[in-house]
Length: 328
Image (tube, rainbow, N blue to C red; front, side):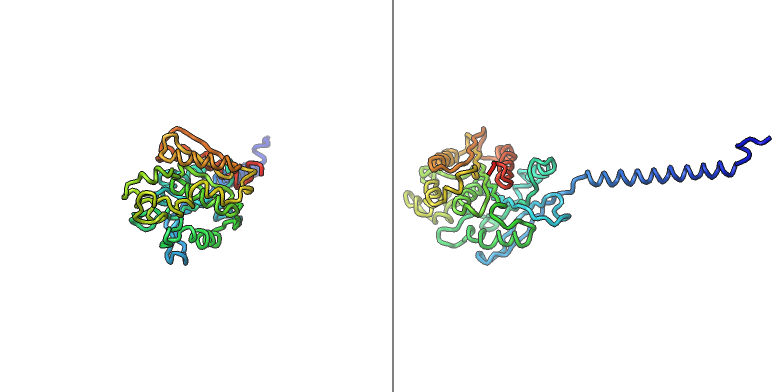
């Protein structure tokens, strides 16, 4: 007498083979689903591109810059706010923001965890030339030899907003500067309140009159021969060009009402920074004028150790002015 197993060997084999096929299909489906989920959870990479250049009719030459593009920049059609990065003087250059400050890694982290919203960050080259014997301060020369500030507003910003996926609005622009670049950022913000949402100034290089007078001829030349004029001694250094970038003049000439609701200006300076007195004087001038701002003093000097430690708080300020995080 045959058992069921003996009566239907073919049926058992078919069911067994079909079971293996179903298992294989389910396994492949699970692997595919896992890969899909993994690709969704893996963040798109950000990118830093060096050696970019924009043509300037004002200067009659190319202006080089480095650019940080946020995760997903090439994968979507959205436009982004722009953070302009103004480097320090001396040996300062655009790549410092990424090679010395690690700004790209910090932006990646803050964007990925949702602390700040994605943005484009652009570092123009503020050096006069490769030797950079005389600082530009990102401003116009006193004798109009180099009109860096004019170039920035008339050529560079329009080029950025044409070439890259940038929101072409003052409310979507901000500045982060170090030392020389911090001074320039504050000057830009106060001279053109509608051009930027806000500025973060780290160790802004505002000198007191006594400090300007105390510079040796060589030190004066390397710093101010362009902005104030060459070969100046004594009181001749305290001229109209120098007065134009002093706190009292900047405040008197700006529209204070544009700074009455939120602290669009942010300062962070080390307690041992040589520019502490000049920046503190500016803080007092702004306060007396009713211009809201943040003034932060931390331990430290005028160096990358201080700037790296200050960078994250500066970026949180930038995000707040770009996204109305201060409640505007």
